[in-house]
Length: 319
Image 1 (cartoon, rainbow, N blue to C red):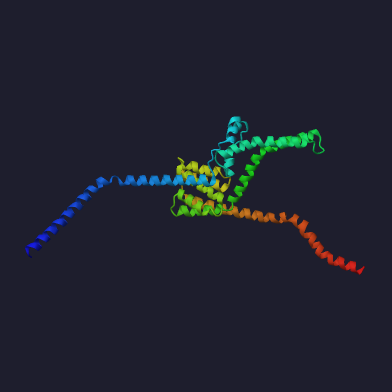
Image 2: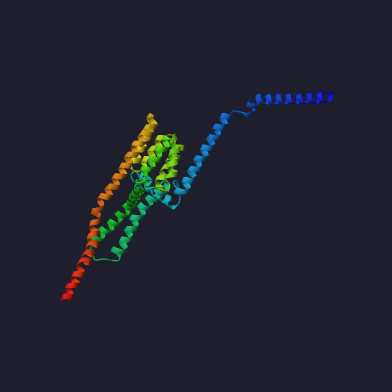
């Protein structure tokens, strides 16, 4: 090997050695410059969780209007007249939640309607019955009609809430066993309770918007409430369905005592499926009695006409 080639080989060797030394120094010193990776990861996870919670609550507030501040004329009237104390209604928040109305605005509207409707109906009755002297009634009868209209106006908001809650419960009852089966599958597959509730909410949106809303709201409460037990109790309090109350109790017991949740949910799913079948059989058993009057009024006269008309025509032609 000539001297020039030996010098080039030596220089290349020195370069490789220098590169190896730099890489070794970088490997040794890089942990000191990167910081705590675990802390960064936990911080990023916390930020992502907070972002998901805010996004979920914003979507709920935007689409469903679960939180309304109720500001304006109605709020000022209710607060100024102290209608919450004057027209106090027991368990109003729970009744509004069972009807699908949440937040402050429905509460103010309820108290305002309870004040306005008796006054409006009373004035209407006074003008058209007492003032214009419409109808052949005595003074006592007209006074009784006026008092009855005022009482109806007072109880009308509560009747409306009850009917709305009943319709909402009827829409939830047929699909709840399917939601419970899906919740059981999610829990047994290894999902956490929050993820299971979120998945059930997304899957049941096409079958029942009300039930999907309840599961979605419970998922949000599980994320930001201090304890899961409060979220489960709120889930049962917003619905009068006995199956939902049983599921809430089972979730509370599993959270408190660590009992297996899969076996409990499987038992509850079988019970709710049997309850749905019993309700269907009850409707089917009541159907003949309900069809008796329509058959007497509509079917039997047509049957008699079809049977007796040819005979009447023959008798008439013979004479």
